[in-house]
Image (cartoon, rainbow, N blue to C red; front, side, top):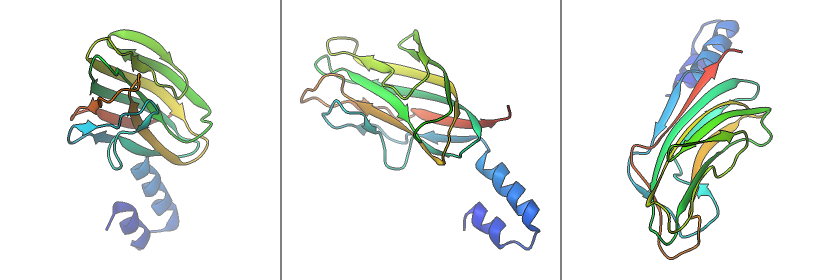
Length: 167
């Protein structure tokens, strides 16, 4: 039984239950990729994993989101990564550092786009504030930057972290 279910079934008063649920859902959460994940040969961003590198966020809360994503690819296809989530957030403000180059991160984009013929890896570090309008899930995505028969691999140990912050 999950923690929220235990809180719901407990005999404590409703106000305490509400506060406990809020603390639980807004605690620091981290999702790690437990094994190398090979992506499809496609230039459209797609979820890296059905169960990992994804974390729930809640409407009206403000979060500090950080992620470190490491991708390898061939010289023929290149790679790109991004983070997506609930539509129309009120705030996305921060920076992504891609292979040592800082970029403004203020929208859901494929900030880590290394073209074919470039380096054989992408190393993306995201740090940004985020405030969703609706409940949903932040998800790390990847794709080839140039369509080719070779695949890309998001490496084990890549991670996504979400911290609720008071503003």
